[in-house]
Length: 112
Length: 109
Image 1 (cartoon, rainbow over the protein chains, first blue to last red):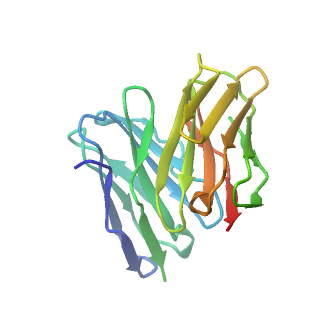
Image 2 (tube, each protein chain N blue to C red):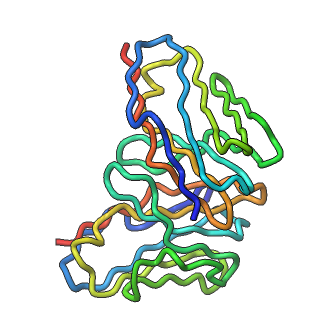
Image 3 (cartoon, helix red, strand yellow):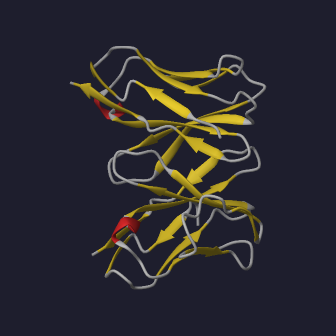
């Protein structure tokens, strides 16, 4: 596709459930980022992939959060045993060779 | 850790005014700085990217400057329009990309 695609756009789940959020980056972009954004705040870094490997996962808040990018393209952010505090918009971005970031529309997660 | 601050947090101006948004950062060893626009409930749209070797970039009515040594960038918007109303975020790339909390701009018709 022409831009970064994220699915689902909205996800409502119950506390304790497992959630997967998907990101399809711009074709050919090797760098992929996941961010989390709460209302009124700037995006908070979670994890950064260069190709298939996680180059920096220092932003993942705890071991309930995990992300993969097995073929160096599509990435999945996985959240286990969701908590109400996980409610946020999860943003994905891919980076051009110049370092310019292009964001998807985000996945809004609501944990009841 | 890089800290990015944006001032003011909110700004309201009448249509037609020129305005300046400010971004400051604590670690001057950056690769680039990027300005984004975010509309309510939407993702971020890239406006301008300034590489560390550059001093400014221009796109239409937008001009962004970068002063690495003082840890500052400004986004200048000329002849503001109601359609410019949005939140403007700056992001600084060091070993990672760090965002400010944004400036919420309202342009009054």
